[in-house]
Image (cartoon, one colour):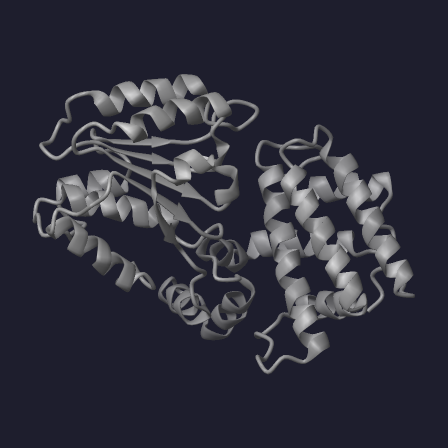
Length: 339
C-alpha cells in the first residue's frame, strides 16, 4: 500500500524465507492504515501466486481484503461496553485451533487489541504461548499501553507512523478532489487517511465546523449549547449510535488545530498548511490562549477523549469541557469565540 513499501518488502522477504512470526503488534495512530496493511498481509499469504506479494485479483486475495476468507477471523469490540469479551476470545481459540480450509494456516486480526478484557487477554495469552502450527495473530491498536505487557512481549512490534501529507494529498487527488482542497485537507489530517476522508466530505466538514464554532462560542459551557452540539453531530435532538465516535473525531481535529496554533505562536520554520477561513479563525482563537493555555487545552481534550466511552451523559461531559474552555479564555483575558 502507498507509503508502506519498505515495510511491505520486509514482510514479503519474511514470507519467502519462511521467517514470518506467529504474532505481531501493529501499533500507531488512528487511521494510518494498520488494519488495511494487516488484510494485505493475509492476502499475500493466501495469494495463488505464492511469491509473498498479493496480486489482489485472485479469489483468495479478494476474499482476504474483504474479510471473507474462511481462514481469516477478524475480531472487534462487542456490546455496550465496546470490549473484546472472554466468550469471543474462547471461540477464537477454538477457531484458530481447527484445521484450516487451505493448506497454510489460520489468521486472527484483533482490532483494537487494547479493548480486550483482562479475562479475554489471559485467554489469548495462552494460545500465543503455544500457537497452533501455521497460525498468525495480528494485534492492531492505537493505544499499545492498553495491551497487557505479557501479550506485547509475545508479539513482534511493528510501528506505523503517520502518512506523509504528500501521500495523503496524492490519494485525495486520485479520488477526484481538487488540488487546492487536497492540500488543505492533507495539512489538517495529521497523517491519518481516515481523517482525510472525513475532512474531504463536504457534509461532514460542515457539521464539524458548526461543532467547533459552537464549542468556541461565547455561550460555550451552558446546558443548551452542549445539547445543541450533540444534535449537530447526531443529526437529531439526542445521541445516535455513532455520535460519540464523531465527537472523538472532531476533538482530534481540534487537537490538530491546537498544534497549528502552537506552531504559529513559537514561529517554527515549518509553514502552516493551507487553511480554510473557518480554520484560520479557530487557530487565531486558540493561539490567543497562549502557550500555557494551549497546553491546558490539550490536556483537557485528551482527558475528554479518554473518557468518552465511560461518560453516561455526553451533553454533560461536553458542557463541562466547554465551560473549561471558557475559563481558559477568561484566564487569557479573552471573550470566548472572539478572535
